[in-house]
Length: 223
Length: 230
Image (tube, helix red, strand yellow):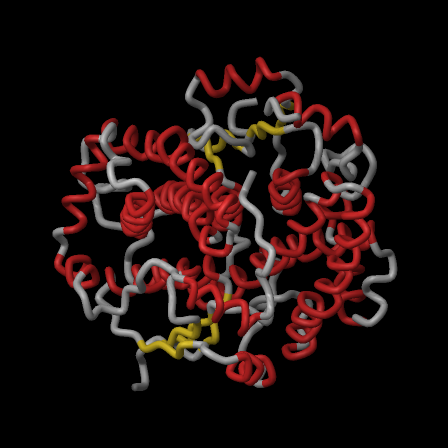
């Protein structure tokens, strides 16, 4: 067990899913502690394990890291997925911020009423097809390489594939006007570590269901 | 003109203010193009200057950088304000994410209805005093150094300083139970570049007013119906 990162979160996607993706893509084995009760959360608080009283939290290399971006940035840098220089890092940062904004729309979807969900779905569709995916399609087109930045797999590619799959779960034809993203999706899904993560039995989590919502509300004392 | 970063944003704080702070603290002169009309914004869109159709955007070193976090990361790294190694960077990232979350509560404040402003005000003070300030107070108390990370000035310190001033604008005695933060604030205030940025005539922007809200709404045609954070 020593040495493996340990993820503290619910047994569901939420904000931790991007961390699972990145670790999996980098071929890093990790363990998870799932929050199921209010008591577990209060113990973490009392132990001072959560810098801002929040999860995600990842125990890694002697640190208790919180804040998703901080966690992802550390893992990416440590595992050579953050570009070769500052300009590549700047590109990666821009791209992951874009995919994060898109995924944030989906992350909260299950919290809405059915009527709000209809509006949100339209928004997700619009943003994906008019704002985000055209950018990544153009990036791939402009430099004709397999990956978004610097001709090697980076955090930007991992987060983009995660975003594509998430949007497809909501709008299955979302890539119909993006041929290069379709190729990208096929290529990235065939990378051995990612292929493995996409198979049943991996630590990838399913889309949020009722029990996920109930658990999160209970742990955080929300109505 | 060549060489100076150019900031594209409204004439107000918003998400660009943290960028102004970082540049000022790093002693980097910068220019600003202030968005006042819908036409200016549409021209930027047509020129393909805004990757995700959004501002902030900063022209720097041949790039048109968007996404506040990407801009700040780049500036911090190029000006030696991002720590000496991965672990220091991890700490800086955690700390700035915390102050970002706190400042985000204040960012939307001017767009709220009068009733929601009251709720949001209470939330800002509560989160600052119960969640965020205690964390930074403890960091400073535990290592007894002048700065948050690695015993040297970093982006985390600038961001925390900015957050403290913003919360104090909402509740002037909010640091009363945080002696370390009071001393921290005094120390940072006395740094020459920070002192200069705090003086009238600098590029620091004032507290957003109705004119700012009206401009943002008019230019972006958004943010008409913003709700308090709960």
